[in-house]
Length: 239
Ligand code: 6PG
Image (cartoon, rainbow, N blue to C red; front, side, top):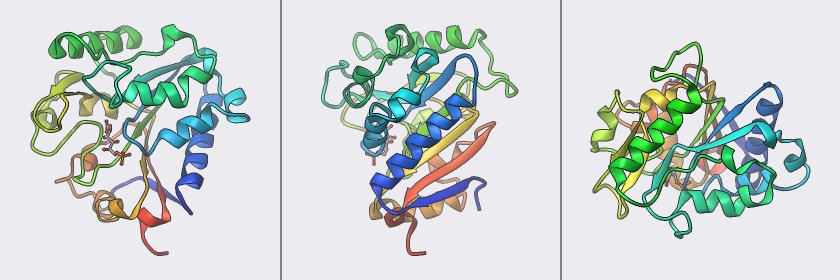
């Protein structure tokens, strides 16, 4: 069984509410910068919306929150497929986070240069070029789970799975749009990683993930801190 605690919520709305409250609790338990590494995809959208609504909006210490993205589709930030756009419309545009603390992945120009630029952004924020396990880069990293076992854009059969030197890399040919993703060492540099998994379609994969099936890219995420799963009943299976 993989390490990591699971919380099973009745439905997607309860999952979003619980995950949003959990992030606020973690932010309030810290002092100084709160590095919040966002997931893309559709599952986290409702959670982001709740973080931008009373009461959570007014409890979150936005003045010291820094936002990052674990992966991005290499498209402009106003593109329908953009993870930045989803988070911006659901949350960022409605909260008082200083714009300089919103660290989006570049979505235009040369993709390899964009990956290098994002890696430079991460290193500048961290203040070093080497990750120290005793000093994680992120306070919270949110991740989703694909039906093929991917997470972020660490997709089966791609070279990104074997990248341990670069912090950020490009993923070509695995999805219609070119992807940019953080690599395992960077995702692992988190005080807490929380997978958000909803829907019956994810049931088989979530079971394999929790069993630690290392053929799944998602199962290879090993945070230096806590590993948690927030799942709805449909994804977790019958009690
Ligand atoms: C992305 C995400 C990806 C996502 C999973 C789950 O850019 O699409 O980073 O890893 O989290 O594919 O997606 P859903 O939440 O839409 O099921």
